[in-house]
Length: 369
Image (cartoon, rainbow, N blue to C red; front, side, top):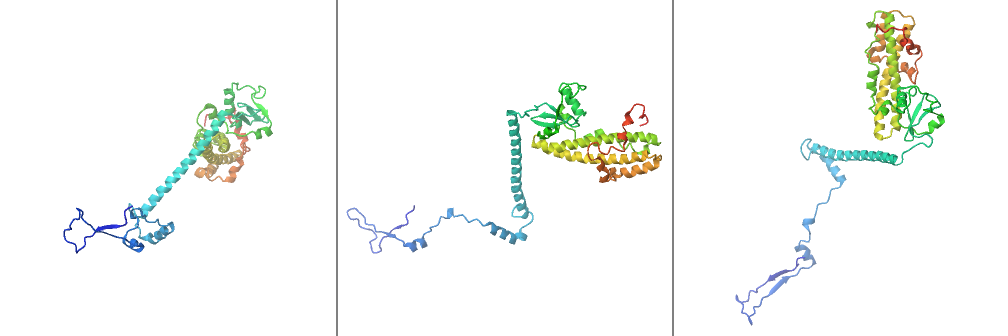
């Protein structure tokens, strides 16, 4: 610390200009100033200005000043403008938002990985129904495949294509009896209901392919382009053949869309990973949309078919009915008209078992279709 005393050399005025040394020594008079407490503070700088930082303004004061200066701040500009405040604040918020989103995503991925690792270490299996078993609810057509200790319901049950494919994949012939050969275990419904559910088993799960989106399936199952339009035909008998063909395709489409809806509604709750559950929820929304469209078309065709069955023999009147029911992509069909199809095999009455005799040899000719 610097000396607080000020040293001065004082030469008295009454001394000769040249001091005479005494014994080769020269006398020098030294005088120093000593300050008292008040003089010390008045004459010396006691602050440390190089370390003295201005105090931060309070948040309340900042916003008070901001409100007062709001309309004085320029709108646009690189700095000290509303644009600058907006962009810098936005960057700050987005930075933390994207960081938090990424953290949540990584946490979910970690949970899924931990579940998969745990299952690999300790594979789950039901104590009485080992993985790979096929169960039937009460000996009926609802079939379940056991995997990871959970039951996976087969889309379409018996005798659907999924079961036919799985049966062959398990090493059996399609003609082998499910129960007599011990391929399927007749399981009480009370037991079935107690086994945890997994995602439904569809054809792509067996073949390892990608699942087909509802819209793609709808196009595949119903490729017709208004072939039920009476204007395309010259007489009632020929038109009726075409309409029956369209009814069969519309019925098949509605059944498949309902199966998809049931599958995705299950999978969005019971799929193995969070990603699969989210994907199932998206697919279920699409399936419900396509299902409603299929039911509108089926309801319209059913009304036309019942009109034909009531001995209607005028193509002109049938054409007017067709135009009314199919206007704006069947939007004339109300929700009350499609409720009759809610539920498996519902709404089949009035369609002569969905014109089952259409495909019987010799009963219908499709040469004119």
